[in-house]
Amino acid sequence: MADKPKVAIYWLASCAGCDEAIVDLNEAILMVADAVDIVLWPVALDFKYESIRKMEKGEITLAIIHGAVRNSEQEEMAKLLREKSQLVLAFGACACFGGTAGLANFRSKEDIFNWVYQDAPTVVNPNMNRPQTETSVNGNTLTLPEFFERVHPLNDIISVDYYLPGCPPPPDLIANAVFAVLEDKLPPRGTTLAPSKPLCDACPRNRSKPLRLEISEFKRIHEVEANEDQCFLAQGILCIGPAIRSGCGETCIRTNTPCRGCFGPVDGVDDAGAKFISSLASLISADNEEESQKTIDGIADLAGYCYRFSLPSASLKHKNKE
Amino acid sequence: MTTFIPKLVCFSCKFGWGYLNTNGYREQLKNLIPVTCSGKVDTTHIMDAFRKGADGVIILGCPEKECHFQTGNYQARKRILLLRKILKEFGVEPERLKVELNLDPEGTRIPIVIGEMRKEIEKLGPLSPSV
Image 1 (cartoon, each protein chain N blue to C red):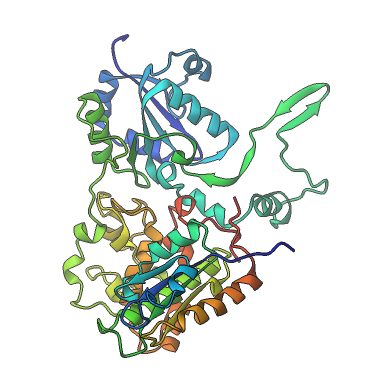
Image 2: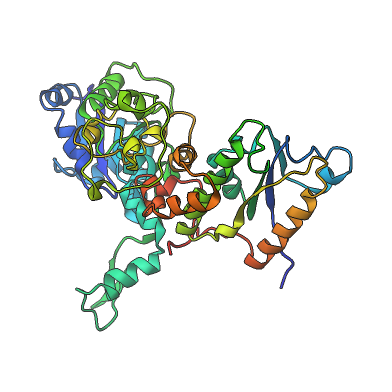
């Protein structure tokens, strides 16, 4: 046991779908379990944080951290794991870019608390109670983690060595990443452990794309019966594939759903949403400003679509969504 | 009220808007970026400008039907319209981003256009990100 590399798997603001993805390694997970010593995995095994705190610096070979950082407890655990680990892998879209939970950044903390603890129709809260970081009860002090103003991707809080995006990451890339660590065949630090080409490159519908894409009216996927073989953009349905990294296995496309961007930007791009706007603009067919504006007005929730998985890492830090 | 001097970034098409090398305007206008074509200005450049502290961004392109590269100015305009929609959804005033398609080979109107934009941004105040 002692000489096996130690691996910690931890969740921050996460839905545990990433844990599920690790379990989806199926038989391969038995090989992983044989090869490593798992020291922390809250969703599957019972370990105490205290045992991590007692470890030496760098004692853990690999910390697989998924989920965004929304509160002080998550920040504390991320920093603890960073201190004790040689390598930190940001696992899944939330850890890499903030994820869907990051869409909360369109609202302020105050807005969120007002809705959740007061304004939502199912809430009864006559005393206007709000969660407090410290509460005194019968002479004892109860504490709660502090809810941050914003959702943060993992690299806002700690330095991250590798990134494995996806919602969740597909099993083949997980296996590649884990075995690359075990066999010491890792690329330079800071690398995203997924192909560097955009999704369109791998898309099974790529060949159906016309010579020139021209969109004069945008539709949402639930409003139409999408052709199962034709490029979504050619059908006027928003698909963020041109700006998104491939490697996901095109699962959405294969189930007739356009790409939503969980794999984040390709190499050399920080802001996939902004990059997508550039490519989308050139597809809009309009002869004058009025026509362009009309077509653009017809796109529902453009910012939400472009930043569905990456709002916290968007280049523009913003106020509130109107 | 303390004086607020808006930070503007101007991307200017070299074909339509002159170089401003001779008349000393260049020194007065910080952040004037000559580009080969307004269509070359990527949305990531604009977002980057806002991220690095610009209060407003203006893009100067050739007049309609007169782009040296056929449709670069149209592409720029569509891009700006899309991006203005995004800015609005982010809670940022869309007036902070403008495109002007016109012809000015001497570049003498550049300071005027920028001055007008500056006045508008002065009314809006600085672009202050939430956190």
